[in-house]
Length: 247
Image (tube, rainbow, N blue to C red; front, side, top):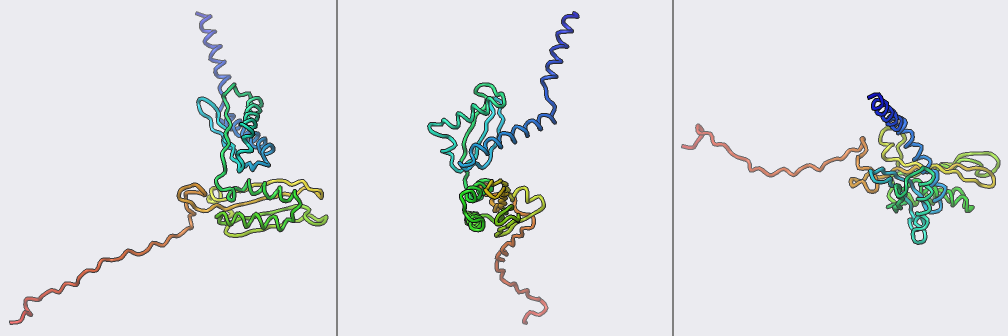
């Protein structure tokens, strides 16, 4: 009997040690996502990396990489995606065949803030003038159907004195709950000869009832005026007063 009690107690304590609290689990998931996003941002920057989504299923963990050039992410005969899978598996101690990486193409890269921020970054690295590079991004985003766009470049743009230049077009909301759904923001750093530049691209997505190019929920201050219904014509009726009848 004492041996049985000790065995049960030891197994129960091991089970409690293996369990993790909800708070620690959420923190661990957040750290995993942040590190994975940083790894893929540095590795796939030239391939139009636009974000990552992690789905945990009972069988395996699925990592969906969103990019504008998915063929470059996959590599020759899927070699590159297999290399990335092996790196993720070894770094986070996943079991064999328990993590799977997929590449998904961005539907509209003009409405993706990360893709446009990377595009602006490579334009500046290539030596293009700041004003010309920013106006090119602003025009492309607005032609893709965005409601508004804002590009900010800060640092030593010309001369020794640092300054910030802002280029805007369209409509942009800055506060409130709709900002979480409608506004996409991306920040990148550009190491140039004269110093480090900071680049921020903010895009306000359009309202889309299907939810493909933008949020399904309309803006709370959006007013839609309904067309008045056509009223059916009613024939006027004449009542006959019996007292005034012709004799």
